[in-house]
Amino acid sequence: MSPTPRSAADILSRLVQFDTVSHRSNLPLLDWVETYLAEHGITGRRIYDATGKKANLIVTIGPEDTPGYVLSGHVDVVPVSGQNWTVDPFGGAIEDGKVWGRGTSDMKGFVACVLAAVPKMLAHSLAKPLHLIFSHDEEIGCVGVRSAIADLDQWPVKPLGCFVGEPTNMAVILGHKGKRAERVHFTGLSAHSSLAPTAVNAVEYAARLAVFIADLGRNLAEGTAQDPLYDVTHTTAHVGVLNGGRQVNIVPDTAYLDFEFRTICSDNTAALVDQVRRYAHDVLEPQMQAVDPDATIRFETLSDTPGVDTPPEAPMAALAKSIAQRNDHAKVAFATEGGLFQSIGIPTVILGPGDIDRAHKADEFITLRELDSCMAALSNLIETCRT
Image (cartoon, rainbow, N blue to C red; front, top):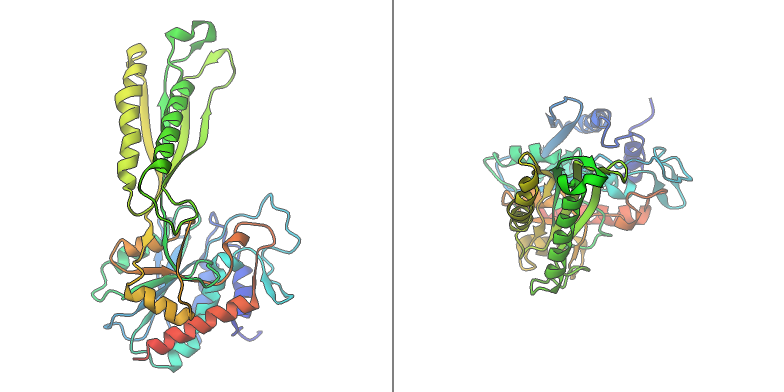
């Protein structure tokens, strides 16, 4: 049997070789991780999903009766189908100073660094514990980690903070927008197109709601609620899907649209969705039901991920800058699991190796230098946790 890899690059290469695209099980990867941890005398605890085919893994290194820090990373990845890869996406090749493959930047690179740092965690007899949380199904709406968050919320001693290792090029990220995605189902009344006035055109009403959402987005862009740390400084509204109809001479009786809000912290996501609901139910639905009483509009929440907003003066911000050896901070457009940790009162910072611009693309990679930078930051954190 070949020796267990020890460097972050070698561990990452092995992790990449597990195809953990979100529709697949992550249990083989967790088996490997638990075997690695067992070699160091460490055991973890799994929290399974309803299918029993996926799980979160929670591991504590250090005293359990003292507040410490969470190191959080997801192990699922997005699909590779339809992409033009020139390397094996699940090969984990280490070439040209890089580790290649799906998930290297997003975000198995951070997980590999955390695992590579385990021997140092043990050697330093931590006074403050480090809690490793490896989650599933982040890529489909931060679904999997929620059971771990619920578990964490019941701990008698809450962590002092959480580091989510999404790829930031080791920049200290103190905020990202919240995201709420909704699907709206329209049920109308069909007819031959020559009798269109006697029918309820579901596509027409879906289009009218889409225009309302777009107008709301323009109002948000022109409003006073702005955050200059974001590249898009305001809350955004977006309609991504409008589906309905079969052919032009049939009035469509069903349609749906998908829309989302990405909100800065000063805007209330639920209140914005309620504005859309009120327009749908108070304006559009009565017009539909005037023709057919059975016509309806129904909302379905697809995902709801809170944002992160850690104050620059917070102790976690200062700690993150200290271990990363930086004085600056920023906010990012993409969502993470961090807001879920923050929602139960755990201050959260996004800090990890790799570049988000490489995520979800063909020939994804992370450089060995980026892994080294993360290892240095983790070493600094371990030193902090000694006292």
